[in-house]
Image 1 (cartoon, helix red, strand yellow):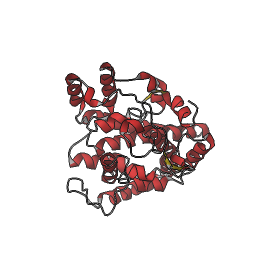
Image 2 (cartoon, rainbow, N blue to C red; image 1 turned 90 degrees about the horizontal axis):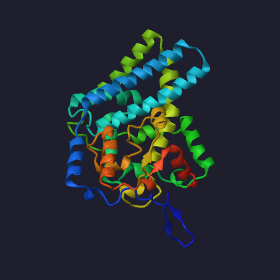
Image 3 (cartoon, rainbow, N blue to C red; image 1 turned 30 degrees about the vertical axis):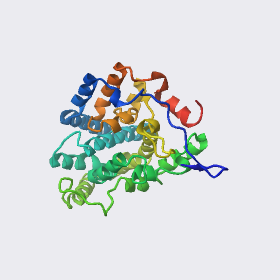
Image 4 (cartoon, rainbow, N blue to C red; image 1 turned 45 degrees about the horizontal axis):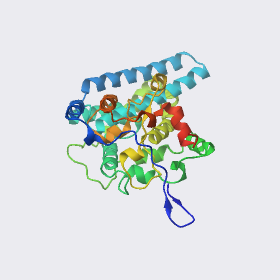
Length: 325
């Protein structure tokens, strides 16, 4: 992350140009009230999106099974990985309790989102909350983990490609899973606690179903393979879109890009505005991802958005990461 210059001084990367002129204190009273109204759980929208995502995943698996063609299988793997990313974003929603505020909601998300992704909701909740509380300090687990040459930019295309290929081979999968796990020494509140038997029972039940239906091959090819390959690449790309980590202690705005996606980019790789408008999430963590675009619209109406400093799509942002501004 940090480079040592010939003079012995620590050199940091270049922060992003300011997109927001001023900060949230510059908003009018009406704008603040409008954002406050967005800060509420959305259980119905969450449930509909969760249902639709699993419908698409199961549909893709069904098509790949019905059409024994290598090209169809590859397309299914790519597509399923993008929907696994949507599940990860839904997991993040419940980490902040933006879907449900009850323990029953936590249990539902453990079973339908977290356990299928081989993580736990409450483990990720502890890690992610520390990222918010200790942003870009040594107590920030994301900041500590994302150090070194692979997170320093601008970066040569070959170096970045090597990182993506390493992710695609699955070598970084277990490191990623560990990073989303609760520190065993960290206390868990009664509110966050889930029955200890729930997770092993889930995996045991899944194994029984797969054995009884003879669908082990589909589970391996169409779930675990994308999870440990393409999904890992998406996770790295999402992290790069959230923050630039080769900086010293800095503000959210200086370390976070704003990316305006084109419609087809949102279709291919849905991010629910979480990665591309990520700075608003740090300012307003009680606003669900679906409301971040509305927050941006409010800032724009207030005249606080410098449009020229936003990246227009993933391609322009990738060029920036490669030093090709």
